[in-house]
Length: 413
Ligand SMILES: *Cc1c(COP(=O)(O)O)cnc(C)c1O
Image (cartoon, rainbow, N blue to C red; front, side, top):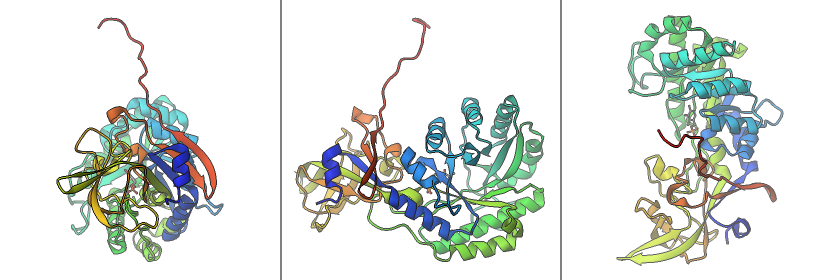
């Protein structure tokens, strides 16, 4: 029997259950792994549910509260609903439009991560219209780790960030742009780094680049956002990665490269999505059918890539694990969803317990890149219900709705 079976019965499946105690545990662990005084930006794209975002924001009164990293009007609204101070929001993304910048400035957002000269100019123009000066972090598309240091180096082509070797040429132009103040640097070189040594190596490499840019280009480094990469399992059993050496290593790296950090110059920031929320979520799916086809077993579930679509949407198929509490896996089967596409597969030939129609199975560690990363409208099923709990207390129960709304129009064009 699944530990959330009662909730599945009450709200139906597919159903996400999020436990806020888990969110708070993850937040506390992350702050413990980072140097004291670090800022952490929560990437709302991992899970923009307002109750989740609120739990991420609320610190234990010890300053361990997250800020928000947002990248759209929807995420801005979610962050505001969750009570984030707009002054603590970092607005990112390579395609910021004038309209969304206007909305962000109106809401009180003042810090933007920028990816190109055009982007900085657009932020500046919007800020000037508001009679403001916005802080721009320059996102850096740095050199790959292992390359030689110094700013004349190359990384991968990307829509994100300024190529580090182009910064010397771009900076004078950025400095002349009205309405913006270059305030620091933003790096985000990797995601989901399970290996602590690898993560530390990447931060070391980033710090060398940041210090080099500050020195060679005389860039005021008020804020240094070092990105993240803190790992958590995705739809499979397991625990968040732990980083027992990270805090001490980061402190000594910062002391070496940017000694002013202890006095807040620069303020050091990190970013995290999945680490903060993945383990707080469980996805409950009903078994609609168990079918044999040419000696293979297909477990047909009532939610697939329309409910947990990040698996395929991110171009990967992870072997999502489904469990029935206590039931051992005894056979292999493909876990498929209800959609009329052969692409609706959550796991191919994975180990499963004996399942029958009517069973409710649980996908563990599904709190990040769940509902919001799914193909919600494809095939027209309702979005999964989302229940937020804290222990035995139900904090909220809701479902995302999408509907067509007519636009004002003339009869001909
Ligand atoms: C997606 C994203 C994150 C969060 O990544 P996780 O792997 O979920 O921690 C952080 N920063 C930026 C800029 C992102 O785009």
